[in-house]
Image: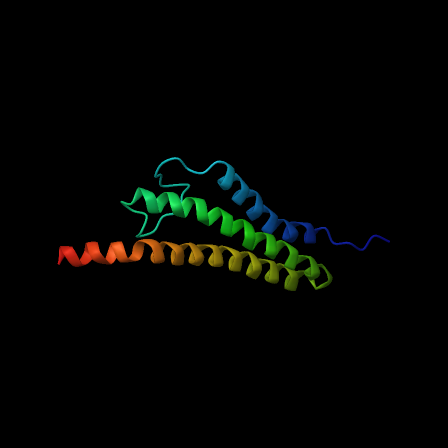
Length: 123
């Protein structure tokens, strides 16, 4: 009588896990550069201000995008399990990629000119 496939619960957990991780990073951001838990790219190496900005901005973007992905996953419950898992993976990956590139764009706008000036002075 109960036809619900409990594997769907696992796929529904993908985006909420990202939500929980983003809330943890918002509440407890990294305090200093580390090789494990922080946003790192060419703008943040050697620039503490850029590193701080990135580590404040990225978790907020991840929260927003994973919240949207969580709501978009709900209609996939009525699809076949393989299709549902594939869509969940696409949504989760999209949330991560969007968060990363939006943070990259912010850093490029704010710190890109400084980086270019520093590189031109070295030549």
